[in-house]
Image (cartoon, rainbow, N blue to C red):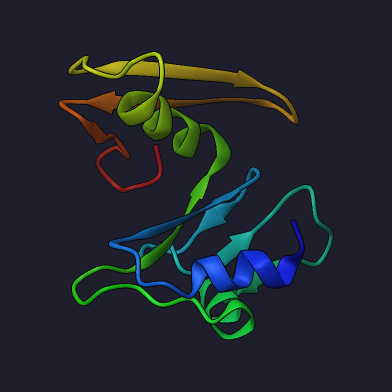
Length: 117
């Protein structure tokens, strides 16, 4: 599949979009990469705005495009579509560029008290 094909598919309105990103720290709204330890110089990058502009992404009213790290995105996908489907709570652990995890409690991704867990 070509990038142009992906772009066409993404231009249709979706209820929500989540962009999975490797280890990184995001701003509170999860629209900017504050720091990505594996990419030199990738600091305070408005990634969501860049993706919207470059790929023409649109979301339906009341929804937004957000960034999520790879482990949390995988945890959410497993909870809704994969092995943990139908369960109330689950944990997903990954070992790749580091060790990461995502925790789904009551069907929702748990981010901790300050949104960075």
